[in-house]
Image (cartoon, rainbow over all chains, first blue to last red):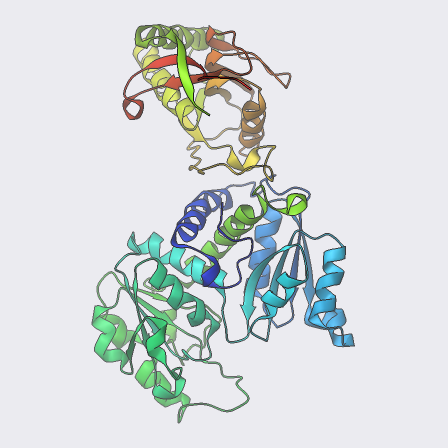
Length: 311
Length: 184
C-alpha cells in the first residue's frame, strides 16, 4: 500500500513506497516476457491518459501498462481535446470525473497541473510530466534500471549531465536518488544550473571530465534543441565537446559504469552515435522498465482498499 | 486478533508420510513422471512442491519440472485489499500439453486455486491441471476439489489453520488455531 493516493512529485513517495514499486515492478517485468502479456488485475477500471503536450514514449508506455493490466485505457491528446476550444483544466477534470474514471495520467506544459486535477476529481492522479517541474515515473524506471544493472542503489554515484534547471527528469531523479541513499552529482555549464543547485541535495560540478572516473552511472539529459529562447551555450559543437558522451569519455568511465538517457536522444549532441549504440548504454532497458514500473504504480494505486468507491 | 494453538493435527512424521503417499498417488494417476510438472503456490505451496519433487526423484529416479506461482495479480479481491507482498512467478518449462499438478498448503475457499488456474492458463494450455494440498479444511465457496489430500481437517470458520514448513518456520507442523479470549 502506498502512503499517498497520487503520484504527482517524488514528495508523494516515501523510501518504502519506492522499494515497494520497484519490487512489484520486478514481477510485472516477468509478465512482459510472457507470450500472453496480459493480467486480469484491473479489469473494469478506467485509465485516462490526458496528454496535453506531445509525447510518444511516455503515453505509449502508460497505455501499454494499463492494457496489460486489463484496465480500459483512453488517450486524450491536446489537439483532440476540448482544451483547444478553450476549456479550462478544472472543467476538463470535472468532466472526466463525471465519467467516473479511476486514474488519470496527465502531461501538461505547466508545473502544478496534476495538483489542479487532483483537487477537483476523485480519481488517482499520476504525473506524466508537468512543465519543468517533475516526471516521477521516469525517475522510478531509472532507479529500476540502475538497480537491475548495478545490483544496488545505496551509495551509487550518479552524474546527471545537462540542462538541470529546465529538466523535469532531473527534477524527479535528484530527489529520488537522495531518498534511496544514492549520491547524485549534477553536471553542466553554469547557465544550465538552477540559481541554488545546493538545495537539491546533490553535488555540483561544471566539468564532466573531472567527475567522470568516479561515476557509476552517467545520466545524460536531452539538450532541448526546440527551445524558443535560444541556446544557453555558444554552440552545439562546444556543448558536445565539453558535456557530450563520446567514445573517448566512455573509455574513462569505471569499467562497470553505465550510460543512461531518458530519450529521445540527440545523436551527436549529448551522446555520440558510437556511445548510443554501445553495450554500456542501457536506454532500451529504461524503456522496457517503464512499462513494468508504470504497471506497478497503477496496481498499487488502484488495488488498494481506499480507492474508487471507498474513497 | 490473538490466536492460540488449539491442536496439532500433523507433526513432522505425519507430513513426511503424507508427502510420500501423495508422491506415489501422483505417479500412479499419471502413469509415471514423464508428462507431469509441479507448480507450487508461494510461499508454502512452493516449499511443499520442492519436497514432492525430491520424493518423486527418490521413488521414480525422474527429474520433474518445478515452477513457482504468485497469484497476487489474479485475485478476485484486488480493490478490496492488496497482497502484502508480491513474489516472483517462475514457470521455467512449457505448460502446453503437460499435466500440471498445482500444489498449495491449505485448501479453504477455493479462490486461490481459481486464481492459480487462470494464471497457469496464461502460460499455455496444459493437458490437465490437478490439485495437491497438505490440508483440506472445508468451507469451499467455489466448485473446486483436490485430487491429492494430505489430511482432511474439519474446522470452524472462526479457526485458522497454520502450516509450518522448513527452515524459515523452524519446524514442520500443521496446527489449528482459535481466537484467544472472548469471541465477539
